[in-house]
Length: 208
Image (cartoon, rainbow, N blue to C red; front, side, top):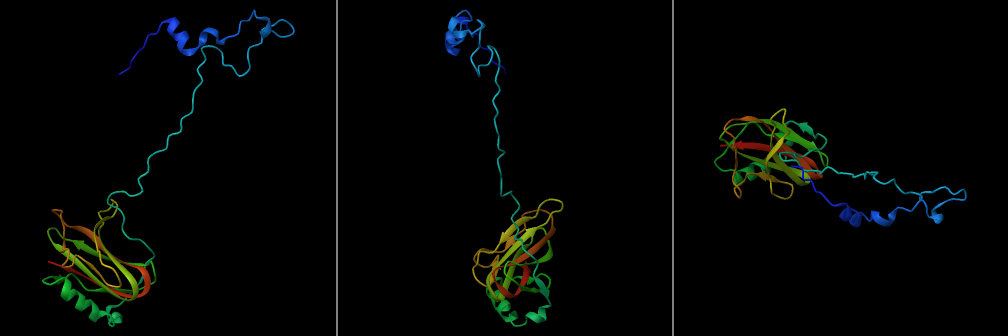
């Protein structure tokens, strides 16, 4: 809606100070040596609009909803038998954290450098509950995420572990397994990251 305001000439002169701001051309002090009127320097003609420049900065949103999957260069995948040294640790951890659940597929392992990630594709089924258990040797901080990958939309982190150290449990007995809230299944992945330290790592997805 546009609003119009009407001001009297006297009020306008009082507000803008126009009454005495313009020199009188007949005033000798405003004339040059030839008797000609010389307007003041840097004075815009009466009635001239002087535009102002306004810089607008678009708001930033560094963290978009549904994003935040761990990233890094890929770790070197290895066959599970090559990680036999830490397999007993994984088995023991799973026995205490995911009782009553069944392995979903086989375990997966890699040789990690600090900051590297290992991704394992899975199908996240409707109505199913998921846990992921990870163990390592040499890695000081191992982290795990369960990520939905609904192409062409951005990946969405569904759950992540809250444990500390070289082992990681997503959906363990303290928090309960992660249940897919969607009525249909979809593609997903498990992301295992050696956040700090380097060494051998192994993980297994469990379902019920």
